[in-house]
Amino acid sequence: MNNSDKTPALQDLHDRPRACANAAASGLARRGFLGGLVAAAAGGALAPALGHAAAKKTAIGLDRAKWAPRNHEMVAQMIAAHGNTAPGYKAGKRPYAVFDWDNTSIMNDCEEALLMYQINTLAFKLTPPEFAAIIRQNVPPGPFSKDFKNAAGNVVDLDSICADLDADYAFLHANYKGMAGSKPLAEITSTVEFQDFRAKLYYLYEAVNDTHGVSVGYPWVIYFFANMSEADVSALAEASNDAALGAALNKVKYTSPADRPGKAGIVSVTHFHGIRLCTEIAGMMDTLRSNGIDVYVCTASLEDVVAVFATHPKYGYNVSRENVIGLRLERNGGVYRNAYLKDWPLTWGPGKSVAIKREIVTKKGYGPLFVAGDSDGDYDMLRDFPETQYGLIVNRMKSGKIGELSKLAAEQIPSSKPRFLLQGRQESTGNWLPVETSIKYGKTAPQLLTT
Image (cartoon, rainbow, N blue to C red; front, side):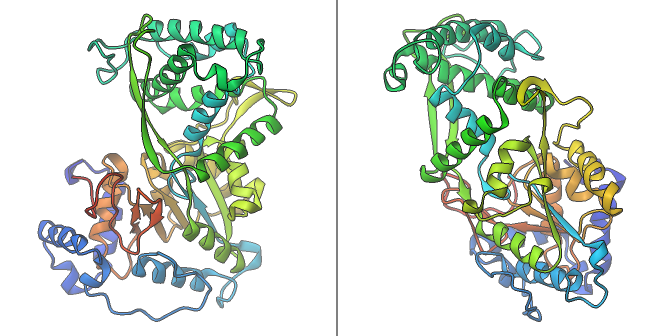
């Protein structure tokens, strides 16, 4: 989006650090400056290329790890200034930080990994009629967007792909011993019905989200937990996490079998396998708590799924369960229903800020000191709270609203008082890089912003 398209609130964020920067920084022409950043990025050491002087070191216990040096020092200074060793610290008014989960606190998306794991293990507690109802639930009928074509070049529509999935699931349910049949999983997964089911159900997930948006797609995908208990889903999530942590980071293309075109035809879809822990985020969370600053997670995945990852000691994040906020389902007793919780916000985009205000601000009386995110779903919470000193953006070189903030963060790199920070990552390893630039999966050149 062009600068002229910014909202007044975003323009205020844009102007605030410029007034604080020194005369040399404010004299830089924007186009020339950003060009210099990209050139410096190619050298792999962005902050030193900009000539930052070494800042005064602050002993608050934040592990250096693979932080971009400037980000590390600024976050360390923030913790020192607001933590429990600061002169004005009040134990009854503890500051707090809010972290997104998927692709911020970890590499990749644990909800999407869980969907693929659920498919691969046929971990459903749904009758064929229940499954048929859920794949159509709240999804507008008709064709998907023009990007969702079959091998023959025809746009796929909801009715056609759902008819194919109905037939696939009926076969799997009747034959798999974990459902109503007697055949082992290994035998079932070798069938064309299963291969068609896997490709088309994940294709449908992508098509629903891209065509109708996350307000339809994000609740839709968690309806597959219907008839499960919280314990069932937690065990499934833990198994999925462990499998994904042990898997290679690898993009795999799934194509439905040529000899089972069905009504939708032959379709292909790609899933990014593998998850990686982010030791820098886990370390920061621990340092914040040690310094009297509370830690929260606000996620657009099912709250109970992320809670497994965020709270289990073996993953190292150690977030308190009551501090995990995310999507919620209605329940019948202890069993999930395929219905989104009434009057609960969709914790994506503006809904994240709504949930933070409802769950935290109403109790504490103030907004977060620090927020971390990576995508358009985090845009609002990154910028909505006047108390927030830093919004950290894990740099995925994206466009859209988060692209606007990423560009702003890049422009603020020379500032001594930035509002946003960019943190680099290498997608092929899942590890942070000690620079503001990132390296996309399948690429070797570092990149600062989307092209």
